[in-house]
Length: 636
Ligand code: X8Z
Ligand code: ZN
Image (cartoon, helix red, strand yellow):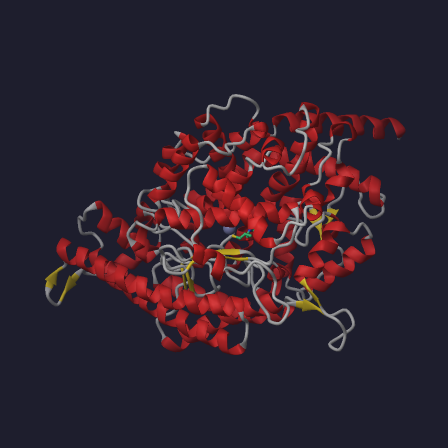
């Protein structure tokens, strides 16, 4: 089972535990009130009386129990993180088995502690003790059933799904020929404009997933069983219980935010579709139908900036291409990370520890299998932070490096907190920090660090905004739908007989895209996205897409910036840095609205920041779309 907290690690299982580790897989958070509304209420009922043989549970016992639990979690976390780190960096049958075993132990211990914690339900407790007990109950991303054989089976499945994805390859010429890794296919998806080649590569990568389907279906059964034993309706309800509000309230909150940003997505989508229709012809891209998923420059159609050259406004192009500049300057992977670190230190945060540079993985090794999907780890919950990423020298990875370092700086900032508070305010916060910082990678900043010579004037703003929107706005429906699908799978509304159908219904409904060729239930297209086999919740990325603009707006205000938000960079601003650090240091010790308030003065997640940021672009897109509609009507 996976803990919720942070670790990214391996999927499946525990991941998170305490401080853990990794962020990209792990997970997070819990909140206090939640429990009483969600699964924990049932757990409490099941626990029945809170009396022990020794009599009624007391506040002193609860305190002692929490102290013991935190100590135990710290030890087990370290052990399991090390095993996960080795598994992800050297995928073999043995490292997979070792990681599964460590996860198994951690999961068993956390499940037992969470169960024991119900003994104190209903007791009037001091704030910290009550909150920590609550966090403990929500700590596992996937709790295992208490039956040891089933727990064992579950931790093995999760470890193996993670390895399977990491090893995934497409072998166009069969087993004897050369095989392509995701790392090799992604640049083709980004750069090729040959629809047949794009389709081949898209289908090739998606062919890795069907073998995961049966294991995934079994994982769903066992994960649900574990969640139900903890008192949750199903695993999806447990995941939705991590936001200091009842699980249904959280689902409503996601929908509220989506409805706020939907018109912006629609404007971008409409413009993109007719440009693609111009490029590829109406046969392939119908002006009123869904966009084929292989034409958007990304394997999952989740970010579209790679097709910016097909869409760019002639009169408003910023005129520089960061990928080309980085390559021309012969930037290497380590230098990419140095750029990221330089931003954080300019805000007054500490340099990364020496061990970060010694222990991280920056370059894809040629001689062994690794999980290339980027992740940020903190092995010992103190200073042993690491990055694991197969860095490519591109503008995209320049951003991803900032994203990952945001995780590492968050981990270091909350390290002084007690174990159960070593996490972000909610998991969207963890995902948003590095991205918020990367919003300050403006032309002005690039000039300051000598990557460009001249800052383009404001006539380039539409081009700059469009390029960014193709990543940030295009992502929104994808960020929303991945867990819509999993929530339905966990609740039983979607069964293995219609996994793929349900996946494409959501892809079409929210993103407006269609598969490049007919699909069937022999396919398992959700499984071709890392976070599904790696079992990392995804709602966090949707939240982060909204929160990062809220954070950026607040940090720019703090820095005294008064111009348009897309030209604001907080680079070098210690006052904004101090404000950021203050929020990071809170960790998960307070409900997330308080952490949000500490940074922004607001206590609700709010999409007006992203909407305001892109307002000039939306006006421009709507005008272009209207002109195009008029042209096509008059031609008819
Ligand atoms: O998985 C990630 C990070 C690690 S937490 C690289 N992201 C999501 C994805 O790649 O699908 C960042 C944005 C969305
Ligand atoms: Zn992340």
